[in-house]
Amino acid sequence: MSVSRRYLVKYLESNGFRLLREGANHSIYTDGQKAIPIKRHRQFDRITANELCKQAGLAPKY
Image (cartoon, rainbow, N blue to C red; front, side):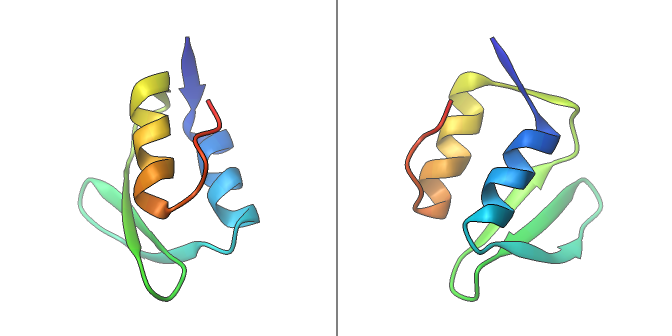
């Protein structure tokens, strides 16, 4: 099962994260304390999406 990048970003934004800047291959999202790099792929596998949620300090959703 794969997860759309759009849904992952919406989940982060609904939990207080916002776009900080665009890097060369990543978009950097922050909540003021943590910075989470999100690759610019259309789809992520479920494991990667959950790891990004854990890095953000959120409950794994996928």
